[in-house]
Image 1 (cartoon, rainbow, N blue to C red):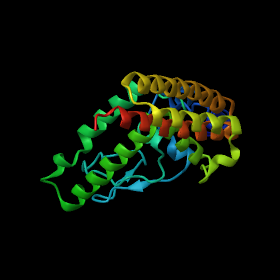
Image 2: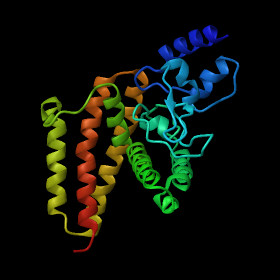
Image 3: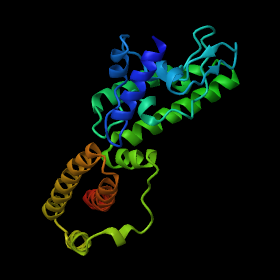
Length: 244
């Protein structure tokens, strides 16, 4: 049975773990005739690594936050990516409501205030785990940071000064929009520019999603670089809308 599951898992991972494809752990479990479980429940097959509780030394699965024997909070597992930490499929199109609910659930378990009467080690672990969860949430929350993180997981990062890969027409559009914003003095004029930038970001988000679904990481990289330009413009619009 184990060898059959391993073969099924390897085939499924090879197919669904393409860049941008959604890796569904529920689907992996179903194909082995088992119940849907947390991703860490399969990690002994995929990675063959075990951890031990720092307090009682019981063997643990990597996804365990607490030891089932002594209930001690465990150190963060650096091998887990943000998608696994937040119990999301590794996919550009994230269920935001589910992500927010997962954050609330983890905060209830990990918030440092709950560990004020615990040992120094547990207080430190709580701070580390809570910080990691917050960072994972913030990264996956917005399309731009989520897309950049997906590129990073695939060994791709945007270089400084990406103007060289941008079409002159695109850069001209960015410069023109910046100039219009600098010259805009009425709330209506600023709002019009904000609406334009928002529409551009929504359009680029759709294009990035399609690029990841096709596994075209180079196209996703170019589109995310464009999103960075419009995201900066969006921030400038927000700053100008705030009364001085």
